[in-house]
Image 1 (cartoon, rainbow, N blue to C red):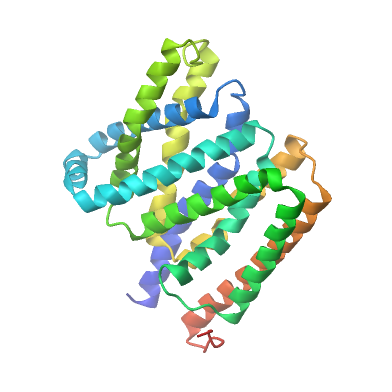
Image 2: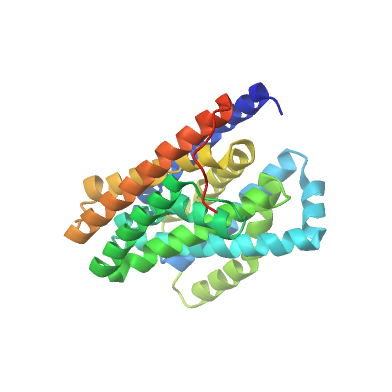
Length: 308
């Protein structure tokens, strides 16, 4: 691929990436409108209504036959089962965190995510780290250590969100399946569990869907609110370099952090302030290094030596 075509592909993916991360950054506003909906019911609703959205989309674009081939491909479905499990757990923890007043802890998880991606590149893809990347990870690790010492009760939220979405992104980047077929397969895999839970919840009188028009409408919209950003993300991931996509990822946790502190009045402990300063410092080092590496790749300038 020529430099011109590479840049064109990157630019074509940029709007999708920006839209996905802005949508995710504003997602706490949606969940705060549904404080009485339990996290499991919210996840189940997202799965069921997302499946409806995806089936309509596949039918409208004439992709049903291609989706059937995806379902019949054993290895692809094993991969999609793994990604479905990861994104389902991510949704559950995130919704609980938002409605329990831990938006800041959730945003920390997504600030950590790019650095987890780097570690996955080293461990899974056997990539070499540049010196600046090692420094960035070390600084961020100090931030996590401070967080562990000062806010142990919410550290698990940040770590689970960072790890599940990092592994989810790795799978969706490498899986031999398109954005629409992949998301439709994931929702279909989760549908039996979601349907069984909703039947059980309704039978025991605990379901909030159907109680009033406003709540029911918001839950029904969860299909669009879930599917659209994931489709945008999957499209961007296949069109853009991971380094560029990683930089865009800071949009979502920044918006979440600002919402938690400025709109919903979450208080920051001294430990959280120190932790965020260290993690942001690590991200700054990581970002500057990534931009330098991308510029060097375009100009052909040598990069600093990598570690062995």
